[in-house]
Length: 341
Image (cartoon, rainbow, N blue to C red; front, top):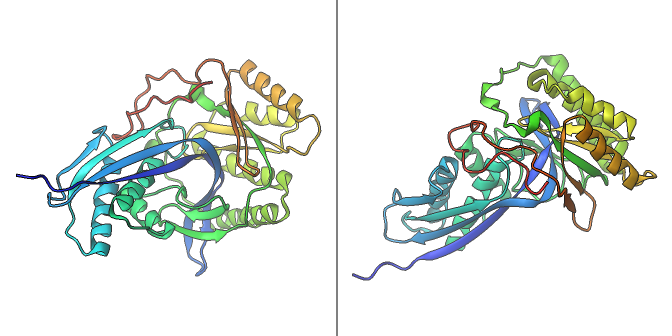
């Protein structure tokens, strides 16, 4: 018997470096919803290859590595969507995933996997899915997702609903970010954190930060963006309680950083520097030395400004040596470390 023909598709998705702003905001109808603005970063990502096998039942789906349960859900959902568009019966196939994003640090590793899968499956069908459709599939696959399916424009994104609340402008102000890993780079189990409730005062505070961030993007004001990121990070401390947070902010004040940012669902953090301020190289070196001398693992220096964001990793030892329990059932696939430090 001749096997049915296979159709192969590929997909890729980047990661991010935690959030600039995260909280509860009002949508266009005045309804409260959780939202966030991520800090984009190039260099690492997830890659997927999906080989579609027409004529096989859709439940015959092989996923490699086998622990990627969210990716498997994303593949099944996307097969159903693309088959419907092509007016074909859904089928099975083989999905292979690779990537280098650390798990549990708040860099969007699971969303990157999911989006890479959605793109690979769609590519195997010859279908182009709009970013909004990709976002909806990602939310259905993992309940909440990061806005990695969007372009580089800064956007306030409702992560549990998969929709853009506001595009804040064309691009972030120019920044140099000195990245680090708090808590020795140990993964943060966000599912174990207490659920915080927000009152009207909290919503008003987040809306003020949203307005300030909008102005910072419109005017290219790195200092104002740093103020927003620091305020958001401080609010995030009410749940995360990183013991190094005060040390991190103190280093930033001493060395002229415009602010700090942290992943609100992980341990990755960054000192934000204005590249237009004098003595940039000296301040970068000072930040790295100060972090290391205080036991905070410096990880990488990267930029947000065009033509493309750049990343430089440090040649010293790893930020985290692994061995911690994974944050959720489908995340033991990669060591929770930032590579090539």
